Length: 93
Image (cartoon, rainbow, N blue to C red):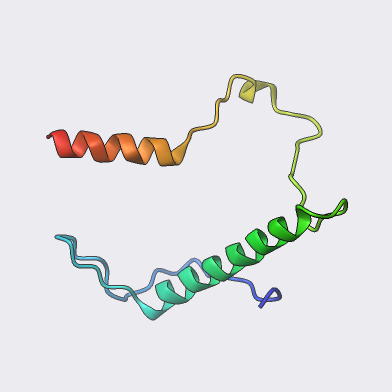
């Protein structure tokens, strides 16, 4: 629901962690967080699709009014491309 929020209380869970070696164990809290993020993203995508046909949309892009001068040379990273390159590099090893 749009009114829900995830709150982190600063305490670490004593629940199981991923043991590695290909098998993963997820806590119920982890699964709830993933579900929350997935559902929230679905709402954003739905709003973007509905905005395509109308002048006034529900989604706005945040733009700094006073950009930080030290970030002037910042170039965004294409995470999909980075992941593809890392996957290809791992296969070569």
